[in-house]
Each structure stands twice: as structure tokens, then as C-alpha cells.
Image (tube, one colour):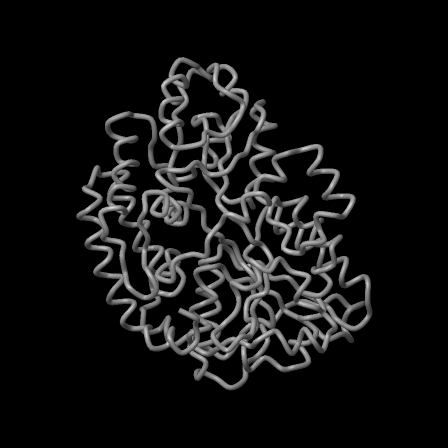
Length: 442
């Protein structure tokens, strides 16, 4: 979670997430165009670069031009980790944005600190019916008090991406494998194909943030990070999931750890990659540039099917003036229009968080023309909410992917690695257990 911000101690992190730090906060500075100078200014801290960032800026510009009362200023903060770190530091210093995109593993830290403002009353005042959102995704933002603190925006699941051209050259079916065992059998054929002097590998694992995909692997092998608030990462099933990937790397020589597994896939160094639905636009561009046809499918099963949800949503903090929070809600309401939700999905590949978006002409025609845009929507019904340990224990994701790096790069014993990481997670859980039980439905 704080891989880009090691300077923050756990104590500082918890203090920055707590609701008792300040009762009111200053607004971050910025530049407002003269033509918008008399409006209520809303500062939105964003984690979106490249295509998603450009799309959000275009939507904000359309909102600003379409009414006369509010100016939304999008301020890019870097990665999800960067945005979280800057928000923590800002709260400690008395300054926060009016609206912020927080990821699946960061927003809950502020929730259990009592720092977030619920959206329900603001939505009612604006005339936005939260029922327009996909209820599976919306409910992930509910707290124990029954109110919503995290409005869906850039929501995703892991998705299986594959090189259709390579599959064809290898004489394989034009589909995603049903299981990882089937994929391993297929991978023997990839070695017979040469692309640019290279023999493609089966897949690569992300050096950083690969823990999200591995959560699904744990479920696929019958394990979990936690059950309720009890840490279970050191179970034999989780060790077996790690052992499977270790075998693919060191015995079978079919996989490896990569700094950017997605880029390696785009450069045809691998036949497949598991990444966010939000990477669909990026991979489509990479595939076109490299001259191959892109395919998508459900993430293959292990012994079971297991795919988590992920991504980010909108939050606001207690202490932000009501006028600016209500103005921020007007922008959220604008994004919740079916045509705008569809625009976001079409440009980025993220899930359509508003159900009616799939019935808009733009998205409906694209789904018909390009089946890749339907895969994530069809898979969503089979996804699970993430284990609470990943969502709420400070730095849990970093601790797990650091452990995975030892398995993937050092041939470390998974059982030993996960025993050590599980001990760390238990200590972290003990620090926040009372707060979780106060704010979260367990």
C-alpha cells in the first residue's frame, strides 16, 4: 500500500487515517481559469494517468462546460499508493481534496479511522438515486452503519488476456484455458513458436502489486488471506498456490517475475497475462502496435474458480465544507449518467459501474463488435469481495507481494514465506481489530 512511501510509519499512517486529526481542512491550491473564477471550486485528486487520465479530464471538461455553478479541477497525484500517501500527509497537515479516488486497499483505512463522509444524504440532496449503480459494486462501499462511503468509479476484476495470434501459430484453441492445468499443457506449444527471435513464455508475474492476482490464486487452491478477522495466509492451501507458481518458474521454466508483466505481454514475450479489466484499452493499443490480435477470457480455475473485485471509487472527508461536498456530488451525478459511464468504459475498459450504461448505443454496439468488452461484465457475477486482511490491515498487500517476490525470484519455500508474512499480518490485524469491528460488517 505504501510501497512508494516508505517514510510513513505505521503510527503516522494510522494517525493520518483517523477522523480525530482535524475538524476542518483547507483546500489544495491550484489554478482556476478566469471564465470559471466565480464558481464553487471542487478539487479532485486522481490516480489516473494515460488513457484513463485523459478520459477523466475530458469528462471533467464536459461537466465544467455544461453548467455555470461548479468548476471541477482534476489534480493527478500519481499511483494509488501515491494518492493515498499524499492524502495521509495532507490530513496530518490540515489540507485535503474535496473528492479523491481511493483504491480498494486504501479507502477502508480511512473508514475504520472514522474520517470519511457518507454519501447517502448528499446523493439524496442532489437527486441521485444510488440504485443506478451496479449493486454488487455499490455494496462494497457500505459500512456497518448501513451508509455508503465509497462510490464506484474505476472498478475492475482481474482478467485473462492472451495473444490470439500466438495461440493460432501454436495450434491451440482460440479461447482462454478453462484451468491453469490446461494452460500449463498448452504452454509446451508456445516454445515451438519464435517471435522476433524469442520463444514466448506462458505468463509473467507482476513484481509489484501482484498480490491482487495472487488473492484469486489462493481462492483457486482453496485458501484465503483471512476468514473474517482471522489470518489464514499460512494455510497449506495458500502454500500450494505459491508452490504451483514456483514450479512454473523453476521446474517448468514457463513463467517468470517481471517489472512490468503487461509490457512484456504487449511485446510478445509472454502468451498471456492476468491484469485489471482497466488495462483493456492499454493492451488493445499494445496489441495493435505489435501486430497481434488480443483475446480475453475468465481467469482460469485452479481447483476452484476465484476472482476478486478491485479498482477504486470516490471518497470525501469529514471537515470538507458542505458546499464543496455537495458540488462534488453533482460531478458524481454527472458521471453516473448512463452515457458518461459508458464513455468511461469504452475508453478505458473499466467495468460499467452504472447498469444502464450497457444499454447505451455507444457501449452496446462496441460490446457487439468487440467481445473483449463483454468478458469482464460476464465474469463480474462470479467474483468475490476481497478478504478483509488485504483491505484493512496496514501494508498487507505490500507484505504479501514482498513475500511473493522471494518465491518468484529467490526460489524460496512458499510455506516458510507465508508463515512469516502471516505473523506480520496478525500483528497488524491486532492493531486495527477494534476499529474494524466498530465500522465494518465482519
